[in-house]
Length: 405
Figure 1: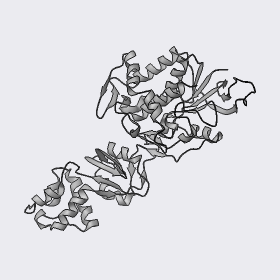
Figure 2 (figure 1 turned 120 degrees about the vertical axis):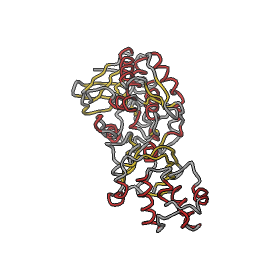
Figure 3 (figure 1 turned 180 degrees about the vertical axis):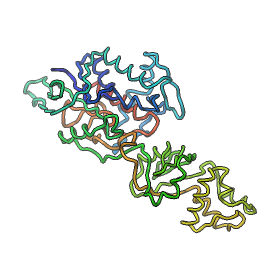
Figure 4 (figure 1 turned 90 degrees about the horizontal axis):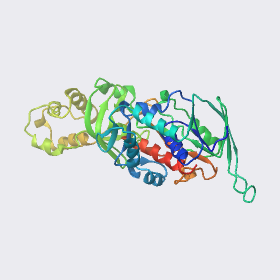
């Protein structure tokens, strides 16, 4: 089959690209090895699809080339996607910090994108295994003027030829949704560099012996500020049997570097040095004093670990000297712990790293050295923070490529 555009990957970015290209009158073929359309959209936001964030700005994204995302994000904004939802009568609401969710379930967004594809004349081939991809570069200047590159894609359904090939196959996160390294293999085939890959927005784990004192606290949740380097996030921390999770931990995980400690302010709204000084005559045990902010179980374990590592016993408040009070306050505001790793791609919401953006046009997502080849969405080295930013990058990068293919 001859077509103008072949898009491999029918997730958020691939669908948006297909819609935009189709609306421009391009003939589009959308291929995916999965049986179901857009599984990551389906499971996102607890089934409600956190489809964007009103506060989207370039600073919400991680990349080895931080300015790359600016062009695409400026040309397709959260308001543009909201307008599409309104066109289809899909209700939505804001939860916190600009995060937008569907009033109903995620299927409403999937149905909308499928209907838009159909209206734009996009041909979808699902449960379609992609085999070999071959490439005929465009002729040199003066040789067949006006001819474009040609891609030949063999699949389990039939073979396809097109002048534009878009890779929208996502990253390695959540393998049960069909995630594979396909996009990175295509990049390697064409000599496109790939930055270091790692799980992002993922729970952090600790060595079993190190975590043993806290493993029994599974389910404890605290409002904290977690920091690594220049990045800091305020939110819930959740203790698990293997380590730490919760929004604040997921956020910092994308920035955390292996072997380095996290800095956790357990009481970010308080001045514990001042509060402890006010308790110089107090007779409560430190652990009992802290239960006004922590669950008793956490307070007792934390104080026991303080005694073990810092030699500061859990005793009545009136028995601490000034130096000890300062040390206790410092530990509460800067609890330093070093994870041993992450929960891996099975629990990660995104993949950090990907196709090196220096090899792509920021305006069109086209490969500079391989005319006609485009990469969009999660497969690219642009990773959003938690809260709808990764979907906005999918819509924006898909739109950018869809305007160019």
